[in-house]
Each structure stands twice: as C-alpha cells, then as structure tokens.
Length: 139
Image (cartoon, rainbow, N blue to C red; front, side):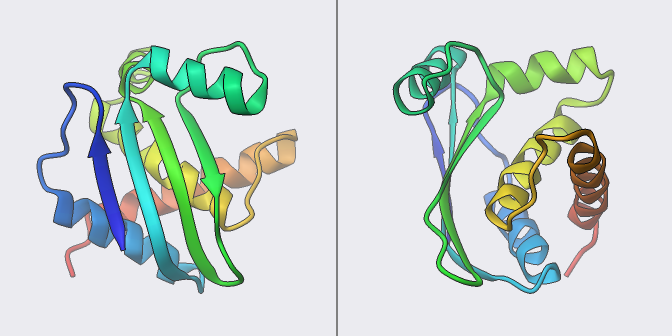
C-alpha cells in the first residue's frame, strides 16, 4: 500500500494517479509494493530528522528509511516540499517534475540504487528520467 501524509500546506491533488505511478515504478524493476509512506513536510522537520537519525546538520530534499524485505519494498520517504520548490527553481524545471524526481529517487534507493559516486549519480539520474516518463503513461 502506498500512503501519503501531509505535514505542511502542500497536498497532492490526485493521490491515486501518484500511487499508481509509484506502483508502476516498483513493478518495472521487478519488485513488489509493500507499505510505502510518503511524508511531505517543511524544511525544519526534515532537518530535525536528518540531525536526529543521520547526524547530518544540513537541509535536504529527501530522507528514506528502508524497511524492505527481499523484493517487497517498504519504507518511509520524507520529502521537504520547501527544498523541492527551491530545487525546481535552481534546476529550471517545473515543481511537478522536481517532485516526481524526488519521489522516484526515494523508491530507487529502496531498490538498492545509490548516488554516492559519480557513476552511481549518472545511473540514478537516468533511472529518475526513465521513471518520470512513466507518470504520463495512463493505465
């Protein structure tokens, strides 16, 4: 099950469309949907999580906690909607495109994709672009 939680003013308009898209991402890589919880929050809340659980004192756009078992993906994906909006301006993309990028980024981490090295970043970005295109595919 894919659930969305909102701890800021931000709200997804068509939750079913987003959850169907996330499910397609997961299935396209040979995984199964477990329990995924997306939590949309403000910068300060995500900073607090980053400090408390990861010992990082920096703002970030996403933090993913992995509870997966084998091929069944489960986890909590925290997204700062303030960071997403700022990054959309920096990268000169729409808010929706940047939101989709971050949402699939978290799922890709749950699948084992990383972005620590330059090569991993290139692969991750390619996968993000591939999965964003799935959002506009109707099923």
